[in-house]
Structure formats: structure tokens, C-alpha cells
Image (tube, rainbow, N blue to C red; front, side, top):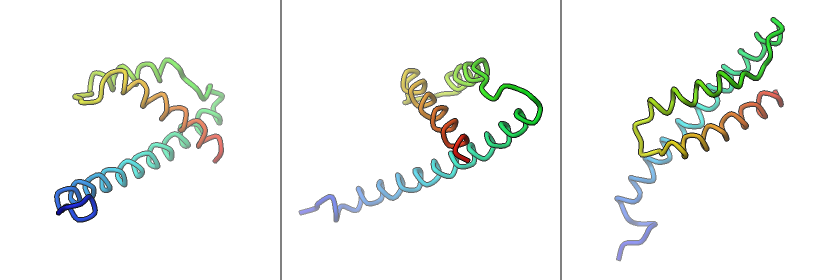
Length: 93
């Protein structure tokens, strides 16, 4: 009898998920580094750090690029979390 611990198909799928999750963390870290550079530049030049117009543009752009299966609502929720996390993390740095 095959179990979750011994199923080779499940093991392969889990390995693929782990790879994607590792790439996701690396991408979030890359995004954070870029946002830190943007914030430093804006602060040095007297530009407001938060730009809600840019955030709205980004969400619309990503919605047009999204081929699914992530829904528009899911994308909106995901980016709300990403933007909130980014602001918190850069603020801590």
C-alpha cells in the first residue's frame, strides 16, 4: 500500500513545489532589495515613498499579464499582502 510518505508521484510533485517555493522566496528577496533602492532614492530626493497611483497601475498591469489560474480577486489579495509585507520589511531595514 502506498502512503503519502512513500508515493513517488507525490514525492516528485512535492519536490517541484519546494523548488517553486524556493524561487518565490528568492524573488521576494530580490523585490525587497529593489524597493529598498527605490525608497533610498526617493528619500534622498524628497519624493514621497508611497505612490498609490503606481501601486494601482502595477495591479492593473499584472491583471492584464495574468494568464491564470490565479483569479483577479486572488491577484488583488496577493499583491495587497506583498505590498504590505514589502513596506513592513523595508521599514525594518
